[in-house]
Image 1 (cartoon, rainbow, N blue to C red):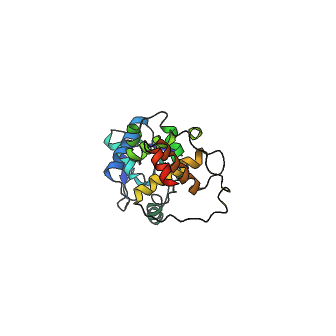
Image 2 (image 1 turned 30 degrees about the horizontal axis):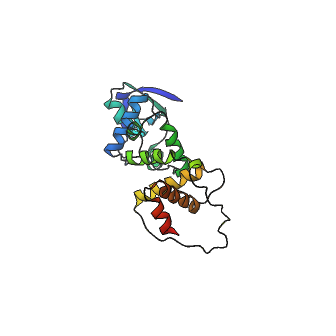
Image 3 (image 1 turned 90 degrees about the vertical axis):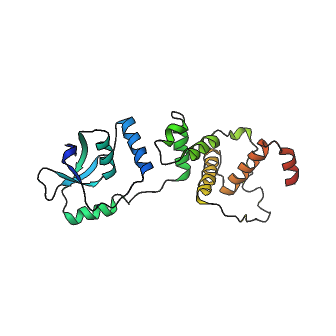
Amino acid sequence: MIKRIAINQLEPHPENCNHMDADSLKKLRRHIESTGRYEPLTVRPHPSEEGKFQVVNGHHRLRVLRAIGHKEVDCAVWNVDDNHARLYLATLNRLTGTDIPERRAVLIENLLKCFDADQLSGLLPDDKGQIEEIQRLASIQLDDLEELASPGKDKMKPNIILDFMVIENDAKVINLALDLVIESAQDDVSRSHALVHLARHYIKCSSRTADALAAAK
């Protein structure tokens, strides 16, 4: 059950070890200010101060809500002892899932229909460059490009391994590009065929297309 509690009755747990950097904290503040919504804090009755509550999960939300002048806060009240409170401190802020890249890319693509890249970069963990790259890739029309090679087309040809390394941020961009191609394709497409698709698109759009195609033959 969600209970509204006066903000001056809430105290952070002294053993909280979860940290949020300043940039993420600003984004959290912008989100709460623009929507008025936030996930309720998890609290417990304070073990030593009558009438007060101790925050188990939601320390950063509490900081932001105090900063923007909220007088009351939505909270879920758990009756837990010290040991269970410590257990939750060690797990609640750490047990998080991992985004599926192609689904996140599609989610951001849909958000871009209502928000621009500047707005989203101020609200999401993603930086503006990543959002703009998703926007650019989402604008590619598959019907205007060369048809993806059939998975069985080159079955009799030997496979070639392309061996190169990229930095982590570049790898994220590459993976998002491949995910968007796969998501947009009519049929099942492998990541290798998605990479070929992007390469063909670049060649087609390049001002040096003729030279590039000649060199590739």
